[in-house]
Image (cartoon, rainbow, N blue to C red; front, side, top):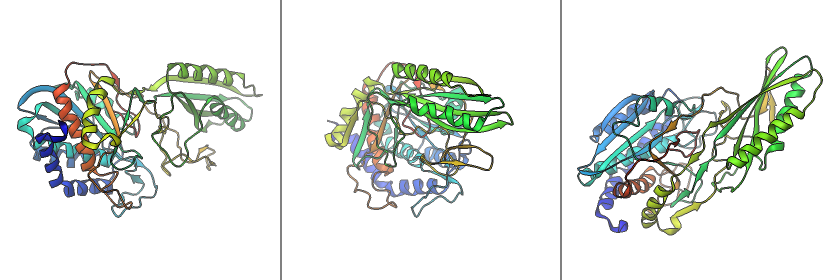
Length: 439
């Protein structure tokens, strides 16, 4: 009975003993956010903590990535937990006493929490090392927001020696305190990227607007409102023009993306979009379309691992503590190119002195596609696991939805259960996407 497992109770006791330290670590990381590829300070905190707990520690993996390995006394599989460490460029309000001290950089995507959860898992597992069957590998990934960290870590051998059979992860989410969200199948759609180059002696700025408007005509759902949820949508196409800008005296570029709930929807969106673009006829304007299918791969949960883990989670947080969604989330983080000014998309469009226009919270960018991870089964969770913790009463609280010890309890239980049940090697799926739940 996982509800009365003495090993889990010892993990709980250890986490309760270090709860204040974990809160302090989270707040320290929040105060000192670091952009993708610059996570040196955060990586140092992680490496020092893991070393003190007796983990085998490797630093400089794929940049500032850190890997910690703890080997139990008993035989068993290798299971990994992955956390991202980087922050994003933003001047969004940071209405807490431990607000960012780095101008223009914020931990508003939850990576400070994800990192602290990883350290809390390390504390819990170190407390039961002698009874641990198998090995746990903690992966602290840099450069998630720029979609470069996963590739770099894989190139540096993060999936080798030892090779995990399963990777678990979580993401903060707008759930009630005490709840964990579980998504079956596709968690988040990938991304098709579209680049339209306009040239000629016609009115290119007006043409850019006309071509950009086609994206909304293809969509079956509109952009998100201010209150994002994790509600899934069974079938959707979300196409969006991310902006346009002049690239010379006689050329403009329009950029956009397409997300969809499945292959049929992706195919339909692509055909419809290309047909509508081809039908536009403007005097003095020619266009060229570059369409990259699945520039960012879908994030898909492994059903067998989900089925094995959910009963254990329910035994700890209760049936009401698990929220199951059977459809992908269109909006949890659709914004690949993050603004340097605001966080969330606004409907207003703005013009700058340079002539660039687009949704006011966007800036254009060039990024490489995400890397794939494997062989391992992937499982992601979202939510606020702390059923034993009081609800947050104000934005300054670490004891509610964002409590690191709350998350780590749930993930620690998942690890313990998974170590008993998992074996084998499984399929390759996408491992990284901006600000999203993805192992």
